[in-house]
Image (cartoon, rainbow, N blue to C red; front, top):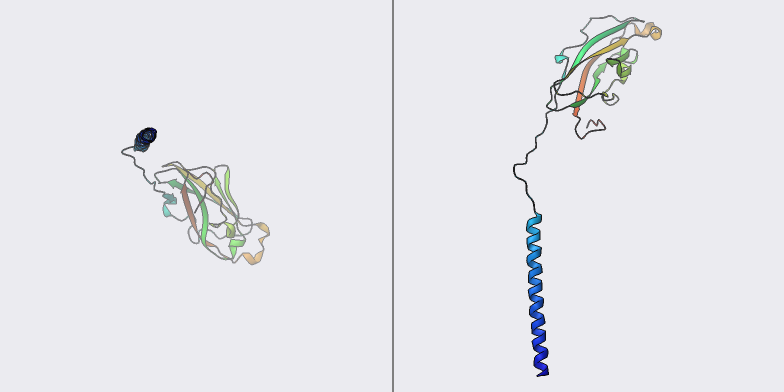
Length: 182
């Protein structure tokens, strides 16, 4: 009888263990099912980045000015955010050609803020900084570019020329605090 009591106890303990494990398995399964949460009708949209630079019009027309030492020319132009989101922008010269690129001083103003100041040859996409103030959706900002022919440039620069294309790049402000242009 002693042996049959031991067997009955072992059987009872085994049954209790199996029931306990089954209950734990059931609770774990229920907890897993309830931990998976879904939210219906989520959506996201991509913004469009589009910048209008002076309606594509030239800032200085061919043969509009004949630069000479001491001369300064100021021209207004605009940049407008035609994007669906706020943007940071930067301006630069591309396709720069001519000896005056290393002679003329170029300064770009946004009101009292200087966006760039240096030689025309240095006003490149790689060297030009982003404007400090973002452009809101639909915002149009009038800027001014100044070309100055230094008095001490010398006579050898007098028969020189400069041609360039003014360009603009824009990137979204959202999730871009460092104004990165990639």
